[in-house]
Image 1 (cartoon, rainbow, N blue to C red):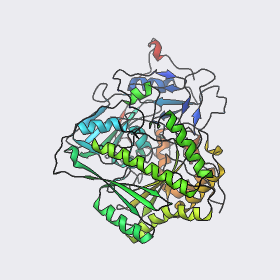
Image 2: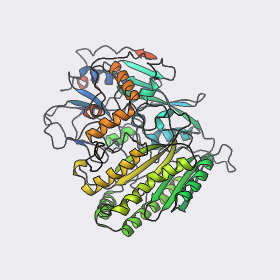
Image 3: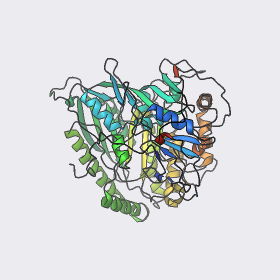
Image 4: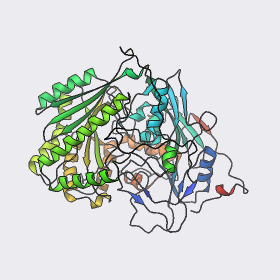
Length: 573
């Protein structure tokens, strides 16, 4: 096992299961959001394993109770639930659905089905990316867009604009060609590329990056590509010291035109750039066969109450968080630079370990952090476009030249990906050949809501965010953003400033209105709404304005009989 790759992975349990009903303490991966157990003792967390159970749960929902889906818990906004650890929650106003053990494909209890001829794979939404990757490798295939880790659920990856590093492809959701969605009444709808248009939009433009507002997505069909051999995936790494814009433009002009998938890390103190790249070669000189591997299922992880990326281990995690937090607020640039270089060395070890196994999913352990992530459209891979990318990165150096009250203690990350037509994605573009840079900035924080983050951190992130927005940037829907009021030239706030969210809605314009009309047609009572979506100015229509015509609709099953089994008895609301 790699020394820098975290704890030993779980062994898969083919008989894993979780209770159908629970009343747990729910928290997201970064611990900025916590939902305590209900003091009433009522259940609000459900883990259906098949459609009939899911439909029964939706049928038992008391009036006024909302429904949201809980995946691998990496989203930092209140997409699932809002922060509630200090509240006295006597009863549930939201039920959570966990699809980790859900399997209903292939006419039975399968959760991955391959269409080899069309290079498509249909996957239940609770399946993790690493399980899908292992399946594809065994079948000489690979994803078009892949993340660094493998610990996201497929439903979560398409509910927000999770990105990869494939220069010729868009965000992961853009590779989805069909969705199966269960509505508030239990009816099943399939949206695909042939679904009739709704106004000026295709339903797929809304089903991709739906923010969970359209219903419970139970399966996703994804386009994949050939991987004839293990050695068809060629990994490489380059480091460059780039102190001038011209040097950055020249270096990345070459990288972006010679490599397929590029993920870069940046030390703003030394101006050191590390570019990781993966090239897909159909006919490699060394033809090593693909070898399947076993990973624990999402159900196994849920059974062990583990979700998302593994931390660095109890001791290392505590030390890392303490050291990094101190360096941000009371360290020197030299100390912060050393920490960033150390993180880059860990990345080198992890990627080398993954490369020896011919895998792209290299990130095997991570410190608990908060992210701010933005997509900025670039005119092209030329001086104008890459100069805009440089401006986004250089904003950090410009800010630290003004004040050193806060210092970055982790590398900046950036990737180049194609835009698309997904309505709610940060990569939405009307230009078919659009290219975006995704910029990630990391902060180390205590396990508290963003309101309790150090003011120095909040101010720093707000100042950088202003620059990224001025460059035309839109935020990643799963990360933290909105650290200021756009009406004020200065100042800062906790994440998701209400005025920022209102301004963001105005910037999205007609496509947000079209999404909202489509959502209201599917869910006029707002069953799948929550306060965060409302703050985004969604869930504001009481009745459908445009009728959504599904490609295929299956009526909800009949309500359960009164003599249903005990475990299927209605939950308390």
